[in-house]
Every structure is written in C-alpha cells, then in structure tokens.
Length: 245
Length: 327
Image (cartoon, rainbow over all chains, first blue to last red; front, side, top):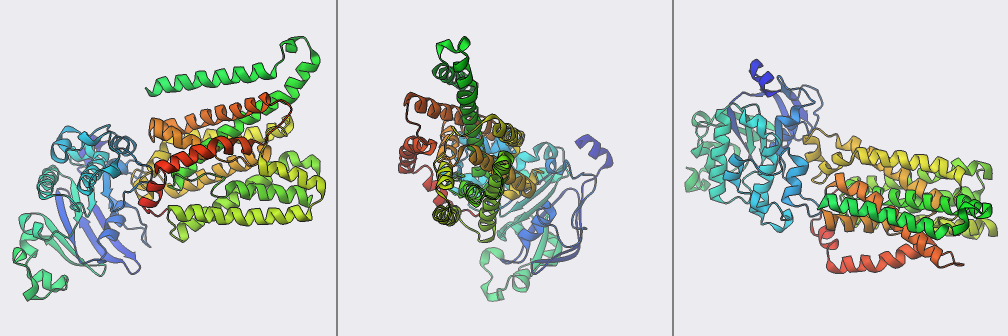
C-alpha cells in the first residue's frame, strides 16, 4: 500500500469548515508533506479537539473535517496515529502486552528503541513504571502502530502533550527522531506547552490556537516572536521569562 | 508455556468428563435399560447444562470485565443476573405464559431482563461518569431493587410458584430437559461463538475507546454488540440453571493472573475452565448422594474464600480504585 501511495505522491491533511460547538471553529487548514507543526495555545484553546478531529475521533457537524488524500478509511490506521492524554488501564497490562495488542510489533524496532529505550520494560506492568517511563512506552506504542508508514514517509503522527514527564535528554533525542521522520515526508503535529522548544526548531511550523480559532500559522522563524506571548498567551511584556525572550 | 497449559487444561477437562461419566454411569449401563434411561434423561442433561452454563458465564464475565474496564465485573455482582431472575420470577409467579410456552418463553424473558439491566448499568456508567467502584455500586443498587421486587413476588405468589422461584435464587442444573436445552443450548453456543470471534478486537478496548478507534475498531458498535451477547449468555444461563454466583468473577481473574491479559487466550480458556469448574460442582453434588445442593451454595463456598484471599492481596482493589478511570 505504501508503494502505491508513493506513486501518487500523496499524503496531506485538509480541514474545511470544522465546527465543534464551544471548542473549535476552523474554516480552512491544511498540513503538507514533510511538516512538523507545534500546536500551541492556552489551556482550553482547542488543541486536543483539533488533534481529535484530524485523528477522526470526533465527527464535526459537517463532513469535510479531515481529508487524507490517497488514504482509504480501511487502512488509515496504518498511517495515522495519535498519542492521547488518557492511556490508563485497569488490568495491569505489561509493556509487552500493550505492544502486542496495539501494534504490529512484539517489541520496539531498533531505531525507536535507540531513542526511547523501552524494550527493557517488556515484562513490567506499565503502572509500576515511573511517569516518564510510562510516557516513553506510550510514545513508542503510538509510533509503532504506524512505524512502517513513518519510515517510508507516509505517516501522519499526532501527539497530545508528548513531553509530559519526559526528562530533557529524552525530549531532545525524541524530537531529533521526529525531525528525521519529517525529512522523509511525514506529517507531524505536536500539541504542547514547551514554548522554549520553538526557538530551537526555527524551521518547523507553529500553529497558535485561541478560543478554538487559528490565530497564527506559519514557519517559526517567520512568525514566532516573544510578542506572541503577550498577544495570545495572556501575559504582559514584563512577565515574559528570560528564556523565552 | 501457554500451549502446554492449554493441552493440560484440555486433558483436565477430558478427565473431568470421564469422571463425570463414570460417576453417573452405572457399570450395568450398557445392558440395563432403566440405567440407560436414567443416564440419558437425568444425568446427561445435567452435564450438558453444567458445561454450557459454566462456559457461558465465565466467557461473558471475561468479556464484561474488559468492556466495562472493571476487573470486578461479574453478572452476579453488577446486577445482570438479578435482572434475568426478576423476569423469570415475573413469568413464573405472574403466570404470564402457559407452561407449554416456558421452553422458549423463559429464555427470552431472562434475556430481556439481563439486557435491560446491562443497558441500565452501561448507561449509568457512561452518563454519570462513574468510577470502577461506582459501576459496582450501581450494580448492587440494581440487584437490591430486583431482589426487593422478587421478595414482593414471593409474598404475592402461591406456594408452588414460590418453590419454583427458589430455584432461580439458588441455582440448579437438575431442572433442565432436552426441549429447553435445545433452545437455550443453541443460543448459548451462538453467543459464545460471537465472543470467540471478537476476542482479538476485545484487546483493543484495554486502553479505552479512543485508542481502539485509532486502530480502526468501532468501539461503540463493538461494545453494544458484546453487551447484547453477554446479556444473552447470562439471561439464557439463568433461564436453565438459575442464578450462579462467583464463577464469572473468579475464572477470568485467576486465568489473567496466570497467563496474562491476552483475550485471544483468556476468552476460550475461561469457557473451558468455567465448564470444568461446573463439572466439579456436579460431581461434588453427585458424591453427596441423596442431597442435591444448590449450585450457588457450592460456588459461593469455594469462590467466597478465594475472593477474600484475592481482595486481601489487594490485586483487584488497588487497580479498581487506584486508577479512578472513567468508563
């Protein structure tokens, strides 16, 4: 399937007239191949809702929500993944069981393992791991679902608050992996609050949401400045921390 | 290791079957027509009922636990069995159906009762955003209401009808016969087949509906389908064997602790172990010649202490209350 898609040179996301009452209102938005977008905004701005709309978890009022050129609904889960914020289970699943139930792999592929180092936890129940270790496992699980497509540049990888509980070393290594995946053609969207990362990723895109509407969308180098914090994040010029200036 | 366990279990089941046959069959079975008649008309239906009901209750519990995301879910505890028992009580004491129609009427009535109580529990779990403990409490509330209505029926019913009703409250394999087994057995086998076919999809529900949906599964459709099938299995089981406690809770729970959480293995094995356990109960009942004990008395006697042991270890409660996850 991936080869077939390559011939059409085609994954892209287009959203038209997405309306979720009191949460999201977008008239037009598109993400192209080889893009990594940082989705930022205040709490309740609609970041998770937008990711859910792209992932097909919610069906907005009209049916023009997300169009994935070249992908059919029956195999889209092999190309599109989303890390949600709620991944708890009541049964004490082991890491190995989570991988086996949710991915085509029994353990993390080598390239992913080098970055996230999760195969050592295979026999452990996930709720006995630290929050950061759990987050690494969930990141690996999410990416393994679409890993074959992602390696060939045909993936749509969506992450909601992926940096939560991750220590700095893993944040840096994982983001570097995402940039490699971006370079081969994948579409990546990350919703997060780590605004200091934006200055380190000048060639990525930034999308600022406020009250469910797009306030800014473009390359970080061109669009992002400390003034955005004043305009869209509800803080005054005097409150801007040094590391964000 | 798992393959070896399955083989061992098959062997165990076969041994139990043989023991059962041996106990019931008199050495003169082949030559004595009276013995043959007793075996065919009394013993065999009891064994078939035990196997079907044990499998159905264990498999439906294993499924319900995942669907409700609650390792404590059991048709008896969360009120599905009591909904079925109540409908059976209404049919029997109310005299709604002629006795000739009970063959098909009772399974249908019990199915409707089980379906209504399952729908109510699921709706409560969803709408009120109940936690794990909340689902159990909702189940207890539904059971209490059903028990209260049944108690009123007791007072209002005549002596014979109330004696018949006692059977539903205690559970027994000794009241089935081939006509009702034909109807109920077909329904149970069909229901169990659906659960076995959906067992790999069930694995995708462990991390919630969103993660299942992201894998291309339709969780709402799957959940609705599985709840209806579980209600069918529990309702029909109640219609032929009454209300049987603890089997559904214990069997999947112990299997998960021994073999992990993979439903591709747990669902069919729950069926086998549930059947084996019920055959043990039948054998115990046969050994106590002259006294036929209610099934729930035996399952509660065996299951109660094991359940307390499990609770004492905190294996269930810490997970159920610790994560506080909403269904």
